[in-house]
Amino acid sequence: MLTAAVPLGVTTTAFAQDTAVKVMHGPGLMVSLRYDTPTASPVAIAMLIPTRKPYTDSDWGLLTREGVEIEASYGLHGARVAAGYGGRGKSCSPGLLFGTDLLGNVTRTWGQPTRGTANSTYVGVEGGWVFLSVRTTIGVAHRVAGPKGPGGTIFTWSAGLEIPLKW
Image 1 (spheres, rainbow, N blue to C red):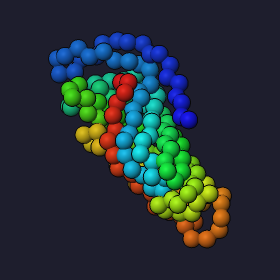
Image 2 (spheres, rainbow, N blue to C red):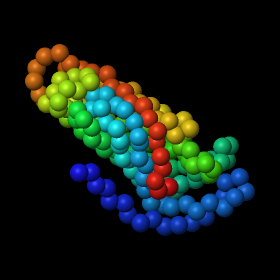
Image 3 (tube, rainbow, N blue to C red):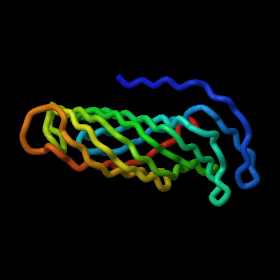
């Protein structure tokens, strides 16, 4: 079971393209509908905890948050948690996301993972890119626990749709 605690934020007003927009100063919450390796996870939930006040990008009019990103996913062949630096900008209309992140992750596999070996723990790093709410990642992970054999170091990737739930 995956749970997330989201503290309440303070609301202020920001201006993007001459339009007033309500800004929450608490964390941003996102869900990704996607496919990833090696866990075959169909969904992930992420929280972006700003390390500075959210701001409006003057060139693109994006309401932008930068800070600590925490992500968790659970799939048919494993589970994964990740944390690191992330930044997202959300367009005022229709609410599409843009951004990048660099995350360290821990993955536990079971069943028949798409890469690596079952019943193993992998530690790795990945970089992500979000454009028009389509998020893709690529990374590498190394087995730190589990059966010996092939799949000691694996390449990982994911692709899917990232939707802002709270911004």
